[in-house]
Image (cartoon, rainbow, N blue to C red; front, side, top):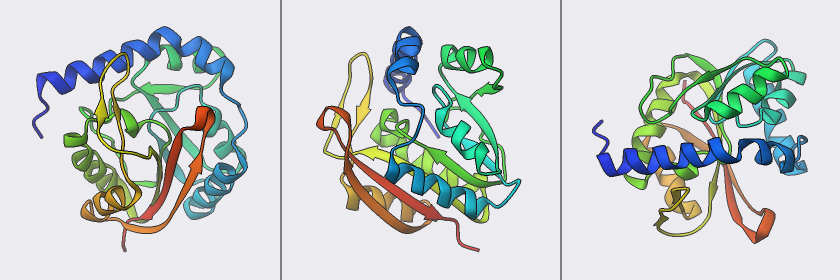
Length: 202
């Protein structure tokens, strides 16, 4: 799919911004998932099965992958920010560079997770990214994603795209996935988030 030069510039600016703050980000983010997220990650691990293969898009510090691995699954840690990969490597965790918009995702996977990362995908690229994720899942594989609740897009150091729950649910359906549940929560700094858990039919 065609990606405009403007979109590519927004994406690269976001990646560069994370490269600059990765160390601080890793220090301030709680290494243990919040209760609601922990329950969702456990559901992913159960669906993937013991030894199941999970793709994590936007691993960041790698805390969620750490938790998933305690549940008996294998996580392919990926990020488009090289500093995050370096920080994970420094503590013995192997990660790979992956840009979800421009790169092939591989697969098939038993599950894909994308937490606090697809919020940076421009709106006109979101459908394409979700289709790639659906194609990377095995039949019956599951997808867990968190998105900022709201309207519109903002560009700056970080490109942010906001979605209302019902609108993003329609995007998930259009990509060929069945939405099993969605949840709304308030995060840090009174930021509103939606969590979605979907499955590839089959």
